[in-house]
Length: 226
Ligand code: SAH
Image (cartoon, rainbow, N blue to C red; front, side):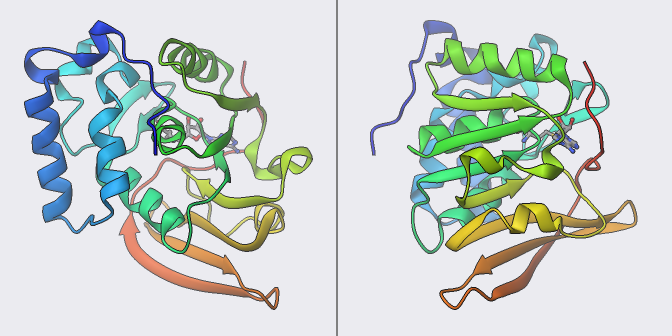
């Protein structure tokens, strides 16, 4: 797969954002059970330090979530890797819907894998910054400013749906937009503890649910903010 990425000189990074530092993150992800080479390669290629504030760039290749403003976070690399791996497990999805664009990093990872990405974010300012990043990296990502709990029916159904904010229960409107054979991955639970859940729409149209791992996400909220 050709990476759909246009890397400017600053994307290549120096010092704490160098290739050596990035390779160390890849080794860490391998140690923590990530096995899909396509996913590891996308994480190696996409410059995570360009998805956080400059002041945090030196921490971009640590395996931690980092603040992106408005009380939100860019997800931990292991979580991004694991969720992407789950989406790719049965087949490479053609079209994926992401709820919670945030920094744009998860969408960029999917786009680098050659997936057609549709992403929805409720905070207008975060979406504007993420769009600039997609543009400067030459990534083709479709996005909209909306409450993602309604999904994106006009563009659906989707082979994959990834929800990057946690709700107490799975959102039926999103499950409904899953194509036959499609996979949805989402954190489910409240502030007390969340579980990463995978849903599959099987050939007979039934939904199979599998609980995968304990995770920690910011909440899925209603309404939109400018
Ligand atoms: N995927 C992001 C993770 C960001 S954190 C990344 O790679 O950086 C989760 C994001 O979900 C936040 O930006 C938050 O504003 C957004 N969010 C929360 N509830 C939402 C909703 N109902 N619709 C769309 N986005 C939502």
